[in-house]
Amino acid sequence: MKNYKILIDGFNLGLSKGSGIKYYTQNLIILLNKYFNIKPSVLFGFDIVDTPVKEVDFMSKLTNNVETIKKTNFLKSLIDNKIIDINLQVSNIDQAYLEQYLKNNYVLNYINIYNNRLLYKKSMLKTINLNVDNKTDIFHCTYPLNINIKNSKKITTIHDVIPFVLPDVSLENKNKFFNLINNTIKTSDKIITISESSKQDILKWFDISPDKIVNTYQSINISEFQIDVKKNFVYLSEGFQIKNNEYFLFVGNIEPKKNVGRVIQAFLNINTDKKLVIVGKKAWLWEDLLKGSKAAIEKGKIVIIDYASRKDLIALYKNAFFFIFPSLYEGFGLPPLEAMACKCPVITSNTSSLPEVCDDAAIYCDPYNIESIINSMEKALNMDIAQREELIAKGIKRVEFFNEKDYTNKVLNVYKSVL
Image 1 (cartoon, rainbow, N blue to C red):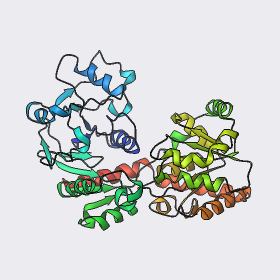
Image 2 (cartoon, helix red, strand yellow):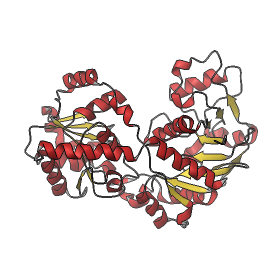
Image 3 (cartoon, rainbow, N blue to C red):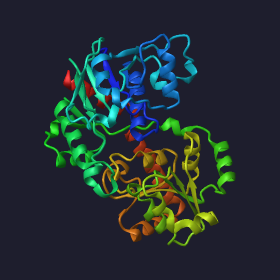
Image 4 (cartoon, rainbow, N blue to C red):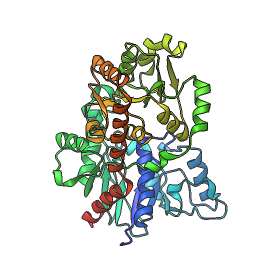
């Protein structure tokens, strides 16, 4: 295997709040190493200067998820500063605290390079061109960024274009978002996306050749979900008064796009002794979405869990009656696959990428129609054991389709296509 020199942006890796794109980036770095022995470099943008304690400073900011941005010094930093090598193998760095995706990878830092939310507020700086001392074959941006690496090919992952598909549930400035994506398409040699649905959305809104966009999907590691989490569920069941197979599970931010408001309305209109467990942080308009369920929450009929560790989440998947995920839009939709990997049957939307991802392994509903969501939940309640087991078996088969090695091969083929 040729030793490709890949540089991956650390924009989402350095954010104080995690995201699906952060997971995507971490996973990409790990899998390139695992299957093809490619150790990508990672470019961060913390406020760190080149001193004897730069590694300690870097780890402090990374592990504490601290974003330090000096907006007033941004232009000066572009002129005066350089890319700094961060040696994470030095003796004063405790290797136990290193994330797996950073171990044995080359880490770089350029002060404030991710300043001002993707740089598009600086109208005079459509694209920033950086020099990297070590040769870089490909700069892979896992999110649209107005940054180029000189003498390097650029590949960008555009996960979705939600601000155009669902403008009412998106807070982004639509003009700035359009300019950002448009500039990204022009300055990238290839665009990766994560579903055919997202690819068609990009083609609809932007002037781009279909040949320039490659759908690699995303991957899921089924072995991650085969761990023993019995103790985790005992703790959860005692703390939240939930029982095995006695609750519908929803996982996602409490915000309009995830459609949790209609999930709650549908649930409150079905005749069942089961509970509804919602795992997700309270995001945009959460109070409006939960206001009709105050009594059910107080009675314990609806359970809200703001945060669940990875093991706790797996425990919740494994013990749920059904996973319900009628999201209005998903570029890919990883949670249904995670549920399937835990042998939890799924109800999901018949829109965006979700039918493409879940195929015949789910019950579908119209996410805009409460009656449709009610019908899907009642269908789940009326399933006999054989029907339920058949749906679970289809889910496991569907998860295998999105295996890590096939996904990494697709990404590597995109790299090869531009070199």
